[in-house]
Length: 369
Image (cartoon, rainbow, N blue to C red; front, side, top):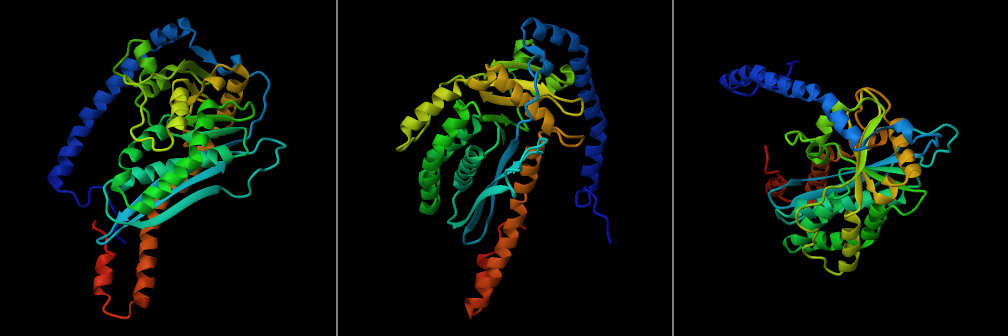
């Protein structure tokens, strides 16, 4: 059996040129990291003077052992010769169970939808927004004390806005399903953003972020916050809470349809998001955690949130809270399932075709090799 190599199908000269550049790139990265490390004391001093640099023990006094869950979603599809197959799904997975706690869910909860649609380059925008409605529904229906969501708290608004601006460009089946789900879950989005219930904490923890609120504050605009603070923070330290940096232009929805009142409430809540960066252990990079003002400025609720993050960051190799990691692993398999669904559909259709199946197989063939 042949062993696959990452360069097996690339031209030899191209591989050689790429490998020759690796030393140069490594030196550039090393110099960048050394520069940040050399400025560690200076940055820590500035953050301490601004009263942003704190230890979790400053607010976590009595352990509460909160129950947690993580919510993540995925969407994908295949562009066939005659149609598109589009799938959307979201999964909620509960975290490690605290001592003496009764298990809430026997199985992970999920929502999914798969459709065959006419070709449109706007399909992915609407499918992504539908995926986000599924995440919000699972988040608010969760019975747990703390809910972790992937991405930013602003992400649903951005995705909804993009989908609504292209709603006329997709098939009626997809647009009507999106509008139906939007009507069901905008209240859930408001609940997540406001977080007024004292017994429920919502937070978003993006895997990737290019935000620079802290970097600008300490005069290091060339770096993004999470990378910078992963060098600066010691285990059990956090920075914040601080208000989310607002966009240069006011939040605006392009095509609110019949939901203008709900979007007005959402826009008001988007202006009251707060952020902290938390490094619970040495094996975890700084985590960006977004939350409502009602959580950030309440030490009791903030302590529960930090405690839940620390309890769920279980070991090396998992660089985010455990339920978020598990939900991500589960739902990302959606992409591998779609080709199998297409194959099964084709076989079933061919069995009932009763004629030359050549045209059928061509119609169900993907554009990509």
